[in-house]
Image (tube, rainbow, N blue to C red; front, top):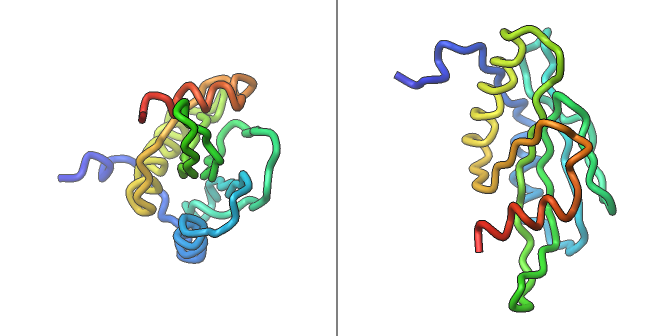
Length: 137
């Protein structure tokens, strides 16, 4: 049995899945993000906004898929697709579990491997992300 079966796990909006798959293969080399949130009434992960960004930011209770121009220590450049999640602050345990279970479903559906959770959204900086990405080599 799938461990997520006992949780309320939100489905991922089909248009969002398509958009995320297109985003994975984007040709642009700038930093860009797709920000998602949970529609609690529909129990669905939906698109909140999509944009090119210069500075990282994340609202509590949102998910972000971030295409980041990463310069490795040896000079190589790659464009990892990073999934960053911030737990909603001060909400009921059921809601926290819905976000956690939905995060797992989203990561699995879109096949993301660089998954990071951050508690304090103010800690989300480019330096923080570079530190996390160094662990992947």
